[in-house]
Picture 1 (cartoon, rainbow, N blue to C red):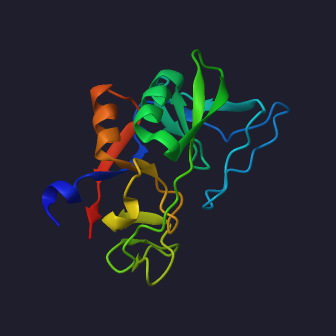
Picture 2: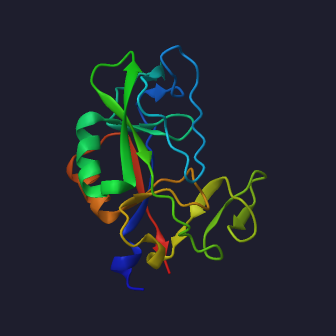
Length: 192
């Protein structure tokens, strides 16, 4: 695999420096919405979702952030651009961010293929030990390696093997960089 192909996918993570911190998604009555990132599980549609700002940490609202449950909350403007590139890989669900100006959506990532190389991908388990995906269930990804054939046709996905990870194609990375998106950090992935 050449370096261009290996660098075409990225893990998208929160860049927590100097920014607000959001709480879990809630329904209109303030009850927490289950946010489990199990493959195939989707956020509810047709109801008002709300998300309180827990702390601004002296920082400002950002274009892209995650709830504690791993749901991306994105400005409407940025979400519309991401959706144009990502197509059917994502669904936009309106969210009222309580205590913030502007309009936001939850970026519900629908694509969840089995796409990680279990032997080459590594992460930290609950005890802080480095393990491969084939050996155990890492909770903190350290080095993820995609099987390129399993990602064909996708631009945004959550690997079924590690559903809290949010992985974006280089086209989405280019968009986020071109838009000078605040709140994100992108780390290149390997591929096999």
